[in-house]
Length: 275
Image 1: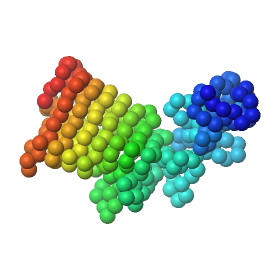
Image 2: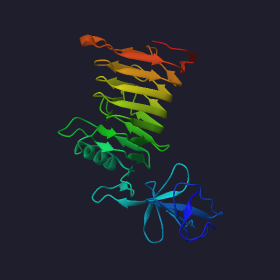
Image 3: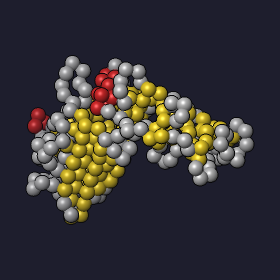
């Protein structure tokens, strides 16, 4: 149970530290600020970008499990916010690009943090001196937070790094001519969990991906495309709908030895693997 600064009655103005469950009366909410949790009346106003504001002008995001977390504005970028732990929250394409490009400046990208969408966002990443579509993370989470990220360029939005989890929402190709709105590259390891992909997933360059409760609807080509070295995809569960082509394609050019392991899922309505 959480430990109270005063008593454990759960009334307005009480503060708690810890991660135990805090029960509050109707009309009250729990606000997180770092390791501390405050019980207070719900006097927040919803903003158009998915954030909330209190009468003092402080900004909050709603958490998946309930409650709210205090944010600060990242100066100079509209729609980009940080919490006390350095986790990022984005509500605009400008904020998404800024978060991606900032990951270039760190030796191993973002480490041990999450990046959470607060609104549906459309991006068009492309090659440049600093690619605004390659998100570098290690031991991190990309939380779609029930929102949809629409990508209008092909082969350009990629996760790079180890132990990345992409979860809870949708990644959508901007048109049927976009085959792969999302991918993994450069010896990376990514778990896609509880997401829907309109389009396919690319796994490139000795990378590993696990698909857990993923629904993929193929657009131009395949549900999953593997190439480069020994890229491996493990399908644990989900639904994979083809477009008349095979569900999975492994490119064996240049001596590649890619592999797809199917442990579960349905494939255009049928149980078991389809290649």
